[in-house]
Length: 608
Image 1 (tube, rainbow, N blue to C red):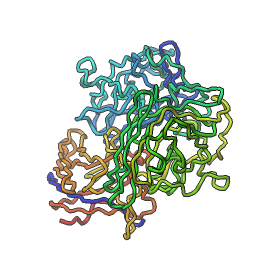
Image 2: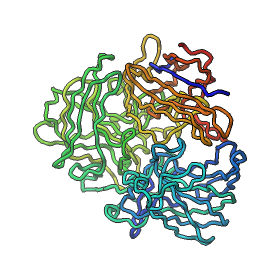
Image 3: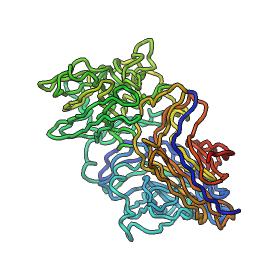
Image 4: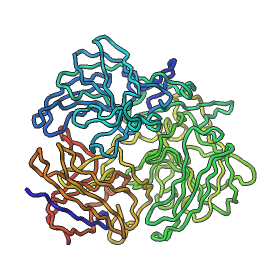
């Protein structure tokens, strides 16, 4: 079979039809206690070229399996257990390393640990994180310490062995950003054939100092029943005689706040956030979106999509939010201020996520004053084009009221200028929850309680990744993407929803090529003049004697297309290539090896 040159030009994608709690213990921070596990762990076995390793992982930290020889490679495969990507972890940047309290019941020498999502530029597409060997000396329970300087993100994808160590080159050492948010932790059996039988009792960071001495939130991890569990670390929870809990004090902010503006169809709104002298200043201008001929939006947000995780206290015993603020413009000058929190999404809600309160009818202007927003004025059913609530929270519609899960950990909060064109000028001093019965109270909020949201939303409500590919689709956990905080991107007269328009692209598209056994395929993506040009050469993989693959891929936030029936691409090819395919999503079948997502057959006709 010959190597094949491909050149594909795409103009448009559209659719048709429309934390583990940080617990202070001397100089340690508890990350996971398997007597009451607070993270979601999933087990995965080697998918490479017919790997036959098997394994399992229990909620109590029992890791059992067999690392087998991969027949086509004649080398050991792997098994691993890993937490869900992007869960919230405490900041361990002041710590020395990880301490694993474990006991192994077999003499297995291939244990490794990895964490984070960083990867060198030339890394194998499926590899990510910093990895180090975990050496367990005996069958007795041991506290095995792993200094962060033992970890490297430059490791061999086939064996797991370090290629360049942290000591040899500091660029491969864990960086501060990763240690502030570990992203995920994994335990591996890798690079050594044999039986695995390991009990993990707990995982801690040790040698910690600085901010980790602060008082931290205490809660009962056994009450966590959802995959997206409550995880709060280093939260400054304060009660006063007024039964309030501090959420944010801009004299000493807990979270990172930033501005995010309308990206929809050429939205031109602008804003900025500056925190100084104990005040967060949110300034900007909401402009008319030319394509929609309607106002866009600006937001001051923490914990948003692709942002650093935000830390919130449990306010499920409270009945509202109080904000100390003022506007430097009169309320008559701008009437589009709103506040929202949480990540709940109503089925069919497209881009609207979280609970939002109505537009403010009064804002202090001369002096700082307080605005109180009762939780029962927030609703998850709001118009993602204007921000207006379409169905209020009520006893007749409790499914739209803030639920306990989102009040126990809001995860994200935003102040909006939305639905009204004009100048935004807010100064905010602090945010509190009010009407709280007790920090530790198990009482429900005075707002009606909605049913818990489903663990997994329908795939088509968020495709998560889209790939134009030859051979198979890849899922890349560490791709940096342009944030796309959508509003409705227009259902036009043809009942279509735009996913990507390369004249004004919302996402970052990159190429990833075959890494398997010395694959030599190459490709590139260039976006200019309203066209994405995907060009490359699919080569024969020498070891396999078969063609490899090239991909043009993005991992991003996508619109809800669950009401649609198909994808439409406006494109052409400048070569007669027969191996074009498209895939989307992240679903992974049991024993599915590397294949993830949904893929369509090879295209039988491409315009040229």
